Structure formats: C-alpha cells, structure tokens
Length: 156
Image 1: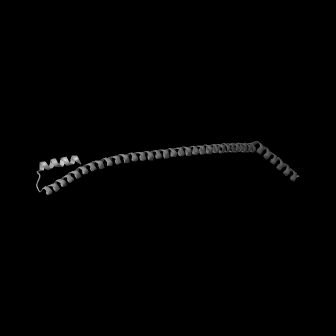
Image 2: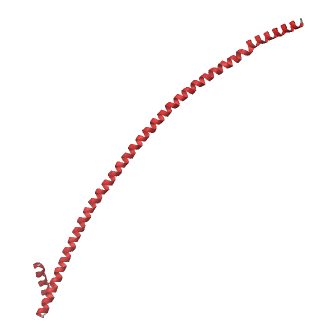
Image 3: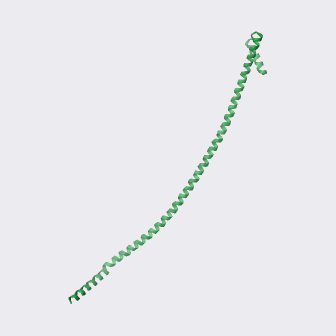
C-alpha cells in the first residue's frame, strides 16, 4: 500500500505540477514564442521589402549612370565640334593673314623695285655723262649735269 500511496501522491503532485505549469508557466512561454514568431515574420517581410527597395535602387542607379554617360557623351561631342570650329576658324584667319602678308610683301617689293630702278637710271645717266665728258674732254658744271640727268631719266 505504501507503494500505491506513493504512486498516488506522485500522480497527484505531478497533476498539480502540470496544472501549475499550464496555468502559470506555459502561457508566458507560449506568448513569448508567438511574439517571437510575429517578430520573425515581420523581419522577413521587412527583409523582402528591403530587397525590393534595393532592386529598385539598383535600377534607378543604373538608369542614372546611363543618363550620366549619355550626357557625358553629348558634352564630349559638343567639345569636339567646338574644337573643330576653333581649328577651322584659326585656319581661316591664318590664310587671311598669309594673304595680307603676301600683298604687303608684294607692295614692298614693288616700292623697292621702283626705288632701285630710279637709282639705276640715275647711275646709268651719271655713267653716260662721265663717258661723254671723257669723250668731249671737258667738264660740265653741276647744274648742267643735273639738267642732262633729268632729261635722260625722263626719256628712259
């Protein structure tokens, strides 16, 4: 009987322990488990939303990068066109300066030619008079010499 009373006492104690656990221990544990499950499900939803936002941000970033590349290409093209315009303008100005310098040089050459021709005419006339003096064996004064030179120059 002792054994039955011991088993019965243990059964009653176990039943009281189970009732005590069911009333006071299990509800907070179950509640903590349910809260944890809710937190985990919310975290998973947040992670999915974050992944979607990341994908959207990647798409937006790639579109902005593409837009920036296109803008950079346009700017580079404009810079190249402007550079070509500057080079063409510089060539045009250089050609104009070359023409001006050529005309100026031609004018200077013509002036120098006329001056040298006039000087040569004077020297030829002086040589002719010198030769005539030698032939005539007489000296002509400076006024007569200048008159003769001028008349010879005008005839030449």
